[in-house]
Image (cartoon, rainbow, N blue to C red; front, side, top):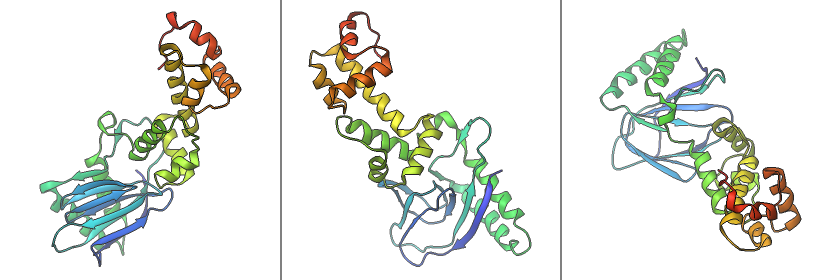
Length: 252
């Protein structure tokens, strides 16, 4: 069971709600109106009775769509335990449909008992997390990791810093490193170097451009630096990689 943090319910006073999720804490929100979710520029529309998950340090915005009464939201901050093998994962948005009223009632009952005990509210939140979880292989990649990957691949030939990638997707430098390690098992710097070397290998064995030009295309304008990185990656320099192209397997 995760560590449970702040519990709350409230009725928003405007049609737009914006905040930055605190570091370390995830948020489960049970939202009972139709609206649009915007997280770091990525937009999702949701129906009444939806569960929305927010990662730590994310910039969040919820918009009410259309002319409708805005009723109570139920929010629960939680911190997963980092143990075991990740077989289940949580999607960003889940439409509960006809089940929404059942879960809303469970949360209301839990709130009513909060002055005496947190156990009922904790139980409702924990069971809802299990209810919406899915096979990890079927869940889309963390949106921040996916958007960061796309940014890096678009800018392989340009100077790229981890801080610059984090700023481009509006999360902190440390959070970007953390989610890359969780999702891919490597740091953003290692991902950048790997993708640059994949592209360098491809260009060396499939094109006739100069080694200097290849280095420039993958973000290494200094030929000596490019040579050192290729040597460290493949055990041989770029000229040798090219000479052996006829019997080289494409690096992937």
